[in-house]
Length: 107
Image 1 (cartoon, rainbow, N blue to C red):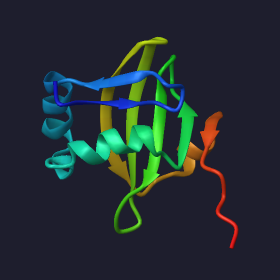
Image 2 (cartoon, one colour):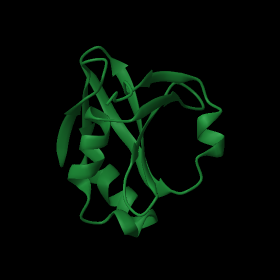
Image 3 (cartoon, rainbow, N blue to C red):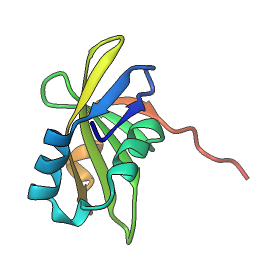
Image 4 (tube, rainbow, N blue to C red):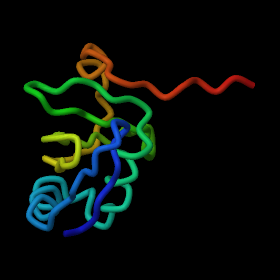
């Protein structure tokens, strides 16, 4: 087990070693960023609906990129990370149904 993050629904989401190796094998730019993946689940800017019943936690990351963490809540007490990746392309993600959005900061 790499770590556990709590989703906005209060569900513990596991990042297993098997999923971590999958992520860094396919997205080597994320190697060394397990903590950021878990933090994106806990502190996303946006959560959108996935293709089936998974959720996508999205957070602005670095150099105008976004970190996307795809995860599934299997029950009220368990869930797991499916994959994660970084992207500059947000157009198709912004078309998805918004499940949760970070409140805007007023100054």
